[in-house]
Length: 97
Image (cartoon, rainbow, N blue to C red; front, side):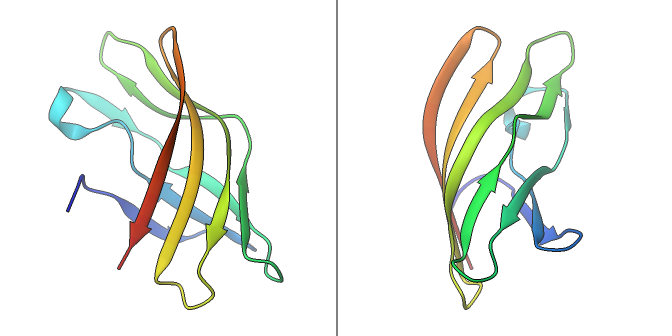
């Protein structure tokens, strides 16, 4: 149970995850987070990137992210370092079917 999240394939060994900002907190624009997947180790990494903006408010920025993707495709586990305005924090993102 949780927020509305979309996961879809990207180009090459990438997946796109749209998870932030939470739609319950008002007007926003969401951008998919691009995650690189190593096809041998199933390690997931992502570079610094924007993932959303609130209308008239702070941007959501992913500073870094590491984790794994299940080889069966049924679970994605990431540790995400995120900035919202002046807040920086690390948080888990666990997605499953």
